[in-house]
Image (cartoon, rainbow, N blue to C red; front, side):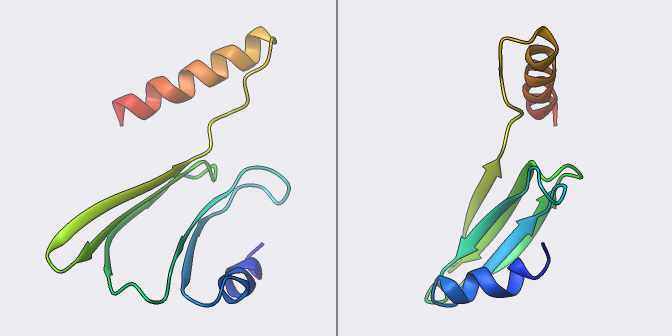
Length: 94
């Protein structure tokens, strides 16, 4: 899991990759930033479940927010539907 943080950016030609890890076999999101883009990360948010990663980048006085969100799966199971809906309700409130 944490070994990926060193390997994946190199496989993509260098740069930075910021992760929000989930369990070893479930969840987890990442954002890759190319090494040729000059920027500063001014804010980072990661949730505890590895479902949300948000970065605010600044370049030449311009700010950009990038989010990677991995919502719970939705199936015909009523319990899954409640978890799915609750995730988005909490996301809107945050």
